[in-house]
Length: 230
Image (cartoon, rainbow, N blue to C red):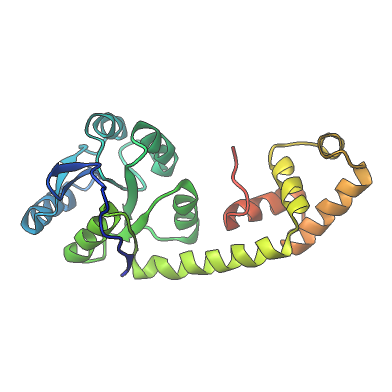
């Protein structure tokens, strides 16, 4: 497992006692939750607060306890996409860090979780010891990604870096306008250039991102982390 550990330096958020971190666990799998509770109790590094498989309960617990980490499954109860909840978690407790724990590690899930600001992505096929180590690392300010996920994260980062170098600042700006649904004339007005100049920028963006349309260019840019949808 890939971890970047950062020793605590004045980090007190989520501490229950001394260096014991509070972790809110949002997972439907009761056996896994119970096993995690027992495992972390043995380690003694943090205390798990079970959200009982409810996103609503998890958000209330985050607001009340300000935990160091939220351990979040991708699908909980009737919520098929909990990645969308990450901004709400960060809003309720800005210092809380989010770790995804899921059976799924497909490219799309990993990309969206990283874009949303998660600090780790672990999979249930890992050992309890690895899961505990990963959560403890993130609680201390580091990041942790399962081996099955690391290659996707690094490959995506390299691709984003390459494309960022290929696109000019003005082309990135045009991309953002396209993502906002602006027309050629609206972009031209906003950037104080002619519509023909905008069309040239758009054509360059489509070519550099190996896309076939404006919509596909925006989709590629979001997936690569070049822009974010508001």
